[in-house]
Amino acid sequence: MIELWTWPTPNGQKIHIALEELGFPYTTIPVNIGAGEQLRPEFISLNPNHRIPVIVDDAGPNDERFVLFESGAILIYLAEKAGRLMPQQASARYLCLQWLMFQMGGVGPMFGQLNHFSIYAPEKIPYAIDRYRNEAARLTRVLDKRLTDAPYLAGREYSIADIATYPWVRALADRGAVPIGETPSVQRWLETVGARPAVERGMALLAERRS
Image 1: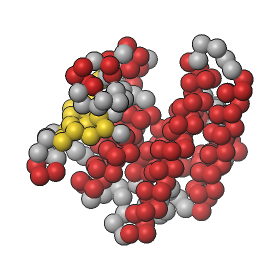
Image 2 (image 1 turned 90 degrees about the vertical axis):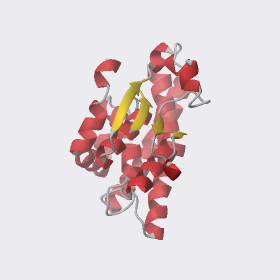
Image 3 (image 1 turned 180 degrees about the horizontal axis):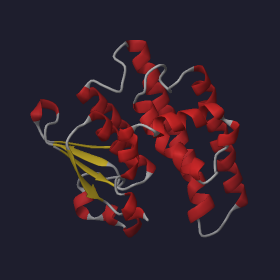
Image 4 (image 1 turned 90 degrees about the horizontal axis):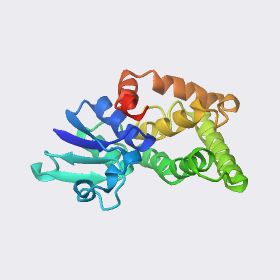
């Protein structure tokens, strides 16, 4: 059984989707980041960086209890544990990891900053909003080029690279913060990935707690 400490943000939703896709049994422990629950001692004992998500796997390596944080690391761990959602052949595997790192180093941080400065910042700073909106638009165009050349980010097969990226693009597309109308391949990909039953279940997990 995997214990999932999470909240329905894009970083949490990545792991919700992966667990649903892979069929691992898991229990959910909500960590309300708006209420500061990520700062509680029991959570910091699992992740000193006090960020969701975290998994605790009772059947980790060597069949021992294993704690893991950072969503990208968790996705790789789960894919390798299941032998699915990440190609085994070397060049395809590295392409998958390349696009996973593109999400971790680009899409997540830049989309997150746009979200912060345009919605949550107490002072609206036009320079910051424009900077991150422009970068989010550029990254979306990069995704569109890739998804024009291939059906999924890693190539022909759906993978953890798609799982990592989908919640971030979906969140900003839903509120018109990224130019989906100008990126038809991203729009096609959003519809394709979003129609997967495991993605629907993963995105719905704890959604009522956030509203």
